[in-house]
Amino acid sequence: MQPKKIAARFLVSAAVLGVFASSTAPIAVPFFGTTTASAASDVRDDTSERSITVHKYQRGTTATTDGETTAGIGNEKGIDGAKPLANVPFVTVKIAPATGKTGSDIDLSKLESGADLAAITAGETAGNYTVVGASTNYTGKTDEDGSYKFELGTGKAADGYYITSELASKSVKAPHAPTLVALPRTIDDKLVYDVQLNPKNDIVNDLSVNKFIENSKLEGAYAGSTKTYTFAANAPAGLSDSINGSIVTAKKFELLDALNANLSYAGNLKFAVGKVSDGDTELSTATPISLNAGTDYTIAAPTGFGGVLKIDFTSAGMTKVANAVATTGEDAKLLTSFDTTVKADSKLTGLIANYLTVDYTNANGVEMDKTTVPGTPTFTQDTPVPDPLYPKTTVTENVPEIALGGFDGVKEDEKSKEPIAGAKFKIAASQADATAGNYLRYKSATDETILTPKDSGYAAGTDIELTSNADGEFSLGGLSVDGKLGTDYFVVETHAPKGYDRISDPVKVHVTIATLDGKVDQEFLDAKQTILPMTGTNLALAGLALVAIVGAGGAFILNKNNKSIDAALDELTD
Image (cartoon, rainbow, N blue to C red; front, side, top):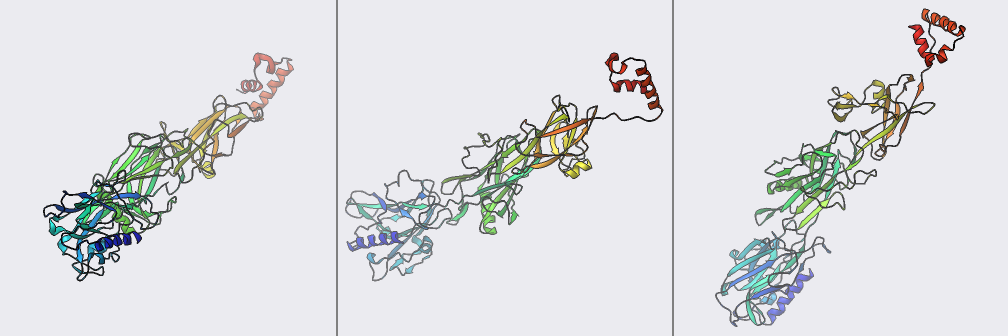
């Protein structure tokens, strides 16, 4: 790797100029480090502490070249304005030129990583140097300020060559290459004993979010029904990692779900590990994992409709999730599912969207988040945002949405098209159900949860019955529909007003997410009843009476008291 060779050559040239020519000569350091000056003495002291301080920074979230790393030149405290990275492991080893070699002969090209450096033992290596005993192998990890100080000892005994290298960690894309450091060094004609290193690296940003309803992105639902949401989030790199023998986890791993005002949280929270592609809904595997509330995660659930559901994983929970994902294999994700209840409102219609945001801060202190709906306003549990997608009637791809529909009907006279009040109707989800009299039902007289014949509680429910008003109008919403194509329902007239024949066959009504809008979707036309001939003794008497009345020359039927023919016949046949 080119930066490594440049650093090595710089040191070689310094050695040629006399570094380590004698035991009192100052020692050069790599070009990307800065130092802290000691007292203005021209001679090495034997009392000052010797140290190397590492300041670790983020270069970006996407590397321009795979594995590329950069060292930055900064002030003594690091690089102003750069993002420090915590929990990054480093190792430092003291070395000396091999027998018959000088500092200019030291070659780091055989050390590909800090792991190679940590693994070397005392003895000569192919790099023309030897390790000065296991006691001088130092390890540590950066603190919250991105810094770690290797305290190498006091006085001349600690002087010499050191190799400092970053060890691999899961949240850093590629560790910085091993670096040769010399103590002390001269800067501005002063001897310094604390060398400052400012390596910069890319971090891994592999956060991925997917969400679906009942294994679909678009799911029909009845008012009052319960639907299961599942969101799939990969376990980000570095969610849990072993750093220098200790488990280090991310600083935050939260799932925030903003519920629409027509949805309420209904519990049944479950966790599993499975494989599912971004934007997809098909699970190739799904293995439950046991996470305990309070120990592995905390949950803050909203009450009533709307609000934000927050699931916050603890360090113990993060480690369990990371281990389960690693066991399942590549592309495995954390699957979190829970139930929601749709508001029991018979006028509910349109699309109900739902957001998920993953709030993640990795072990290095870098904040990342990802939402299922691009451009979603920022929200927290205390400040949820309204759903900008509701109400709407256009499906948004890859956004989990619940679809409900309804229809507007009108009852009219077949010929005059005058509205007819008082007609009664029931609704079935299929022609077969309509024929069998298995109509949609409300859960109770006071609960508009819509039940189908397949639902539990159906037997105790009450048939949904619609009655036309003075304008002949009636309507119903809260129906489960295909969000893109719509769904057919079957309406049966169960009662016609006096003087009319009711429609004897189910009427098919095509219901969509946009049809409950006050505009007539279906006309229901009734014909007036015809007067049927009567038979038997009463009919004969009625006929004779009618002849007698007409024969008497009175216009009784048409004029007397303005009675109708039907009324007159009723009186004569009583």
